[in-house]
Length: 205
Ligand code: GLN
Image (cartoon, rainbow, N blue to C red; front, top):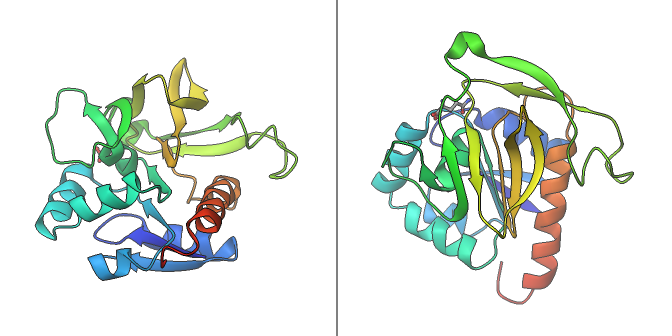
């Protein structure tokens, strides 16, 4: 499976390595041509105002939105989750806005307030297929998902707030599963991509 990583800015190489470790092919995505060749897309962590502006400048926002609407799986981590959110508290910065969540940026404070904790993740840490046991999650100037729409499933929470959620083909998390050795969240996403590619066979991707 070819899994793209939006490659303008942020922790692109960590995601590429994780994709390789799941046995799939990582593809850097900066252009519409690269986008059209992938079965799924990861939006990495970094800086969301910067990435949102670059998406607009390179004209990739509309094509990504269209692929998402057609069912392509997308996984936003940290900044990526901010780009997916329909509403960003107190901000009208550029975004994709496809997922029915509200997000609050830098909800834990500044860089010095970055931390690691162990999470239970519904559908992953309680599932034999991925291997049981808590997931070590690293939060770096992390956002929080402060509202989830009726079609959004909360998969993990921290301190009463959502930190990993899924709506159909969209997965958003506030932490950094690409940092460290544990590939379970990426394996879960790769399974979403495999399922999509099975159904979409015949539509030319
Ligand atoms: N605070 C960053 C933002 O608003 C996100 C941080 C991250 O991706 N680690 O974009």
